[in-house]
Amino acid sequence: MIVIESRYNGPPNCGNGGYVGGVIAAHVNGTAEITLRRPTPLDVRLAVERHAGGVRMLEGDTVIATAMPTDDDPLAAPDPVSLTDAETAGQRSTLRQRPETHPFPACFGCGPDNDGGLRIMVGPVPGRELSADVWTPDASLADSAGVLPEFVWTALDCSAGLGAIGQEQTSAPYLLGRMTVWRLAPVRAGDRYAVVGWRESGTGRKLFAGSAIYAADGTPVAVARSTWIRLT
Image (cartoon, rainbow, N blue to C red; front, side, top):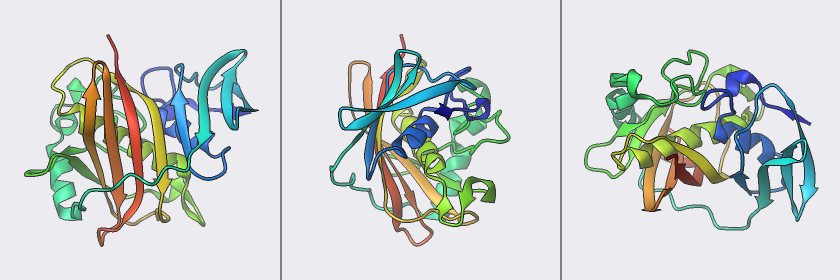
């Protein structure tokens, strides 16, 4: 059984997509592709069962999300953004400059109103087709092996969405639909990281995005590919 606590929300009354993805991906050996099929309810018991080589998460008979193993090669990360440039870009973020424009201001990953959240709000990097912010993970997010996977997924989730959606110039909100994360090295609590998101392509109501987390020396420690769906 899985319970997504209310503090890990994305939109009101449902789980943050990246956090949920990281939780369910832990039930798959190796790299997992997760697909969110319904909003994830909070503070309720959700079943996890093996299905078609992967797992699915259910509320009663309703499939909320699935996770399938993948042997795809990691997404190629762009040239790194320095911590200084990432910090400057994050301060430029529209969500920091105008927090009232955030469609989900209490989001655990990027919400300006969530003091207990990650508060990763990427902003544009001049001369680059991507957005960035600095993240220093708190010790409460980690164990002896490093930052827990679900929080790495969360950081990659919101940064991808904001990095891609920022170029879309639309007020309609997007939600995460599908995500794959490749964890390349441990993410350590207390270290500073550049978190980057960018748009890969788009068609109709879908945006395809990439995101990455870089150590201070520019080494990528995690990368992700994600699909976003515009609400109408």
